Each structure stands twice: as C-alpha cells, then as structure tokens.
Image 1 (tube, each protein chain N blue to C red):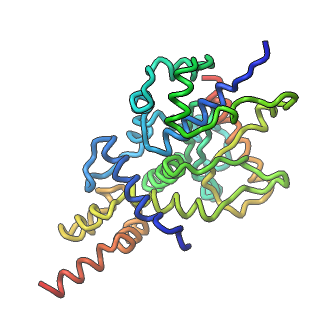
Image 2 (spheres, chains in turn orange, red):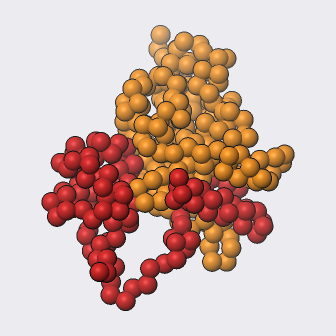
Image 3 (spheres, one colour):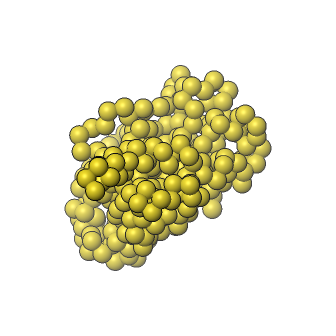
Length: 182
Length: 114
C-alpha cells in the first residue's frame, strides 16, 4: 500500500505528541489503556458488552478485533478481549490511530448488508498503530541494546509487529550502516 | 420552540476535531479561550452562547450552518445515524456482518444509556 505524500512523517509526529501527552519518552513502552483514559475515550470489552457473542470463542474470534463508535461528545473503543494480549494492544492502538488521524466514521454495513471497508484508511491506521507501539527511536533502542529477544515482552508486541517495526523504522539499515563505517 | 442549532452534532464534531489534534477537552478549552464548563454544558445538550460558539467555531474551523437543520429536513432515525470504524475481517459472510452491526449498536446504546 502506497501512502499519501507526507503521511509517514505525519504519523510519527502524531505518535510523538500522544506520547508527550501521556508523559512517555520515545523509547518507553506505551500503555493503550492509559492513552484511552488520557483522551477521554471509553474502552469496553466485548465479553462485557456482548457476553453471548460468537466472536468470543474458537475460530470465530479472528473475525472481530475492535470497533470505534462515537456518540455525541463520547467515543468508545470496544475490543475483543479474548484475543492474545499483544493482539489486544495492537487492536486498541489501531482504533486510537483512526481517532488521531481524524478518519471519518461510516455506517457499519452498506445498504446491501456488506461490510464497509476502506483499505486506504485501514493501512494508515495500521501504520500509526505500529509507530505508537514501537517508535523509530524505540526500534533503534532495541537493536543498540541488543534487546531483540526481550523486545516482544518489553513492548507488548507480537513477533510479526516487532519485525515489521524494526524493518519499517529503518533501524536495521541504520545499524548495518553504522557497522560498516565503524 | 423548534431547535435551530444541533448541539449534539456540534459537540460530536468538536470531539472528532479534538482527537484529530490529539488534545484533551481541557486543552481545547484553553486553546479556544472558553471555560471548560462551557464545553461540559454543550456536552449535556445546552446551546452554546454566542461568544463561546464563535470561539469554538474559530478553533475547529467548523461552520455554524453545518449544525443548523434546514427547514423541512427530516432528522434521521437514531439507529440510522450510528457510524463506526471497524477492525474486522473485510470478507465476512452476511450473518457475521449482521452480528458485527449488532455489536456496534450495543456499543452505541451503552454510550447512550450509561
């Protein structure tokens, strides 16, 4: 997915501002629950709002991750609390990213009963969620301090997310260049 | 008397603008130059006073006419006004998509009722 011009820099600025507002340095792990509280966003669990939902069990869990619902001046993020803990953090950050990027809300289904899905805004939210969870500075910190083995636990991210961020942040490339010139 | 200004829609738009700028309500009040209580009152459905409205419109770059229903305009049923941003499998069968919609409606109702 090719992003609009300037998007990645904008996402990094947003992540930096959010971290500043919750009192975190760029290399600190982020706590999505704390971010929701700071910005007056209600965080709800699927198991509490819809205890009988089929998306709470077995294979069906993968079909539903999270949703952001606004009403008046309130915003709620409802997430699937039966996902792995790392996945929950990623899901919540994805929804926070939609809010911080000012993405427009749409009816959940089209008039034909299909899911509304915009690949462009979903890719943007994925990117910002990744930067919120592990900033470029955080990725460099992981490699410089040789924390790759502990990083998943330290930052609460999946192996896939960790590798994605180490690649996309340019941390691997910068470390390789530094090794060549040292 | 007929309502000439949709405070709820205005507050919702302010909320979206606030999050889009990564700001808290307190910061909005400070930056717009209004009392925090002015924002709380609008959030509870009160009409903003002229000065507060002007300050918040300037801060948000919103236009007042966006929140003034035109004569004869029918307000959508509350359920039809529900919107969301959903993270779920994009290729869902009809029954699962309907279950997803039910989750959104339950969340909306929880916000309304709590």
